[in-house]
Image 1 (cartoon, rainbow, N blue to C red):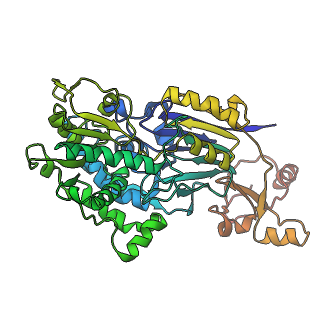
Image 2 (cartoon, rainbow, N blue to C red):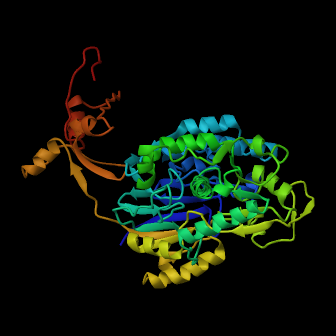
Length: 543
């Protein structure tokens, strides 16, 4: 049986977390799924492995959500390479992307590691198109739809249908409804191939109520002891969830009312306005609260600029500061940490996922000293605690989703190698599959799926359809036209009505010197051609 190849190759996030970017090829169609940077690397070293593919051949880019490890390489791709395809994302993702990436560009410019300029960013965003949840679009014959993924406002999964072959890419997702986001949705259609995150491997999360108790208790202990508590967070996503938790806890504890809680980010007010605008993309709990008031208008949390909570600008006494970036690799959260880390009264609560190569990951090992951005060493005496609010599925949630999707083949991405290996070994047994039916490709390693050829089915249109329904012969001449994985049978004189093609007529006149009689020449031509018409043109000469 003849087959086609469906090939998926991680250009990033293959046995690693960071720079998510997956190249999908089927026939002459090519797609990139996400285009992020690695948070633990700098400059071009943090980009996906773009050199493994011909970027001018990429038809389509689909961006699942606005976190830097899934989207921050997009302006580089569209403005600094030969890529000329289409880009799609949800409305909320695009609304937040400009502010998020402008902040990213400014930080990188200050470190002389910028991959692109603000002008590049503006030009890139002008090329980005949007899609709604449950909307199906088509581009060059490839159909794609998006579905809620939880994780962060606007995050989505993409279901692709290329010539009847369906691929579901989850991006980062969460099946647990939290205080403001709805849970991920299992699409109605069953995919042939599932590309799914494996961030937490075989770990199982504690109940949300237990994690919230640990989170608020640690923060309360630090500030009640006169210390300052730093909460490193991504500018959007978990920040909004933790703000809801903190504001509720502060409201329930009057002794904390005089202790300020700052949400410090250049994106703070902008992000909260976008959250209020796209309230329809959140869960029923938040939508119900919106009917009686604004759930993101906090009583005890103040959204401020970075300069207002710079180490020299903060008032004396205990406080809580929520600042980005979440992995402490640079920016305000890093500067605050370096100012506070040598005081045992202070504390750091790590509430998100930490990637290898970042300070946040190092702090989980409780080091006695840390290296500052200027290269100097400093004692670490502050309290370090962690509790995961990262909106990624744990093992049980991932397994349940994969079983519900019921794809023929599963490809694991976005996970550290050891975690992914453990997940792979458990999954194929739990799913009742062969080990080869669950893949875990490394960076640049293609996974090839053989797709059997299907019978050619063509739609008869116009007079061809009428003839077929009447059981009559098709008009002559009729043509079979194949375009974007669709085949149509159309009468030649109706091509313009049903296809982008038109019938043309080529007329050619050749003058030949003939030694014989015209009658002999006509007899010779009629032995070769069906129809020969003899005409005598005045002034054409005796022959």
